[in-house]
Image (cartoon, rainbow, N blue to C red; front, side, top):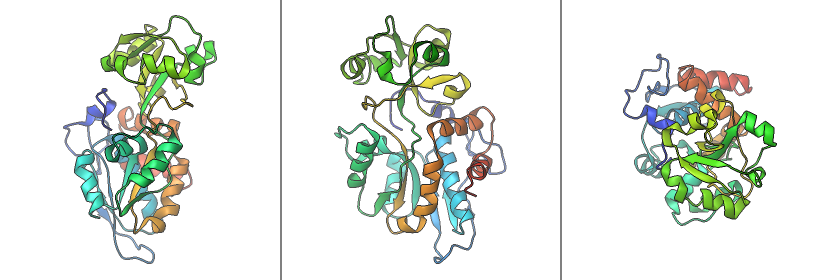
Length: 304
C-alpha cells in the first residue's frame, strides 16, 4: 500500500524471513518460497502465489495457497517480494500466477488520475485498467485502506455507524498524520461530502492512543489495523466514497482464472473486514505463523 501515513506494516520492514516452522508475527516473515506437491486435477502445472513483504498480505496469500492445495492444486509460494514495482512485472510475465491485492491502490498504480472511489466503481474500473493477460476474481468486503474510527463508547453514546452520523456533533477533533489536514478526505472533505465540522490535531504514531485517551474523537486508522480490535474501536462506514476503496482482491493470470475461480472466490466471500482485522491480531499480538493462521481460518469457514 503506498501512502505516507505510518502503517503497522512498517513493523515488518527489514526483518529476517523466518522458516515455516517458526511462529510468525509483525517482526518476522514466517514463510519462504517453498512449494507443496499435490495432485492438481486436470493440469500438471504449478500455480505460483506471491505476496507483499507485509504480514497481512502474506496471510491472505497463504489462505489462497492452502485453499487451492485442499482442492488438489499444486502450489508454489513466492512470498515477501516487496512492493508493486517489484512484483507487477512478475505478474505480467507470468512468473507469478496469483497475488492478493487491494482494488483502489492497484487501480491508482495503473490509472493515477482515476476519480473512482466507491467499491463497485473502483472494481469495475480496475478490470478495464489491468494489462492484457491479467484479471481479477471477486473482490472481498475486507479492506485495507484509510478509514475513520471512534471508540466503541463514543459510537454508542452518539449512535454512530457511518461518517454521516458525525454531522451536527460539536467539538469534534480529528487526529491523524500531519498531512491528513491537507488531504481531500481530511477536514475539508468531511465538510464538503458529509457536512461534518472538525478541528484537526496531528497525532501520527500516537493516533490510536490519543483516541482512546479522549484527546481526539475521530481517528484516521487503516481499516485492517489490529488495534481496531484490541482497543475496541468502531470503523465508521463511508457510503459516499470519501476514501478511495481498497478491497482485498485476487489478481490472477487470465489463463488460469476460470480454473481457480470457484476456490478463490469462496475465500473472498468469507473474508470480512472484521475477519481481516482478527487475522492480523493473530499475527501481531498472538504471534502465530501465517501457515497456522490460514489453516485455522479455512477450517473455521468450512473451506479446507
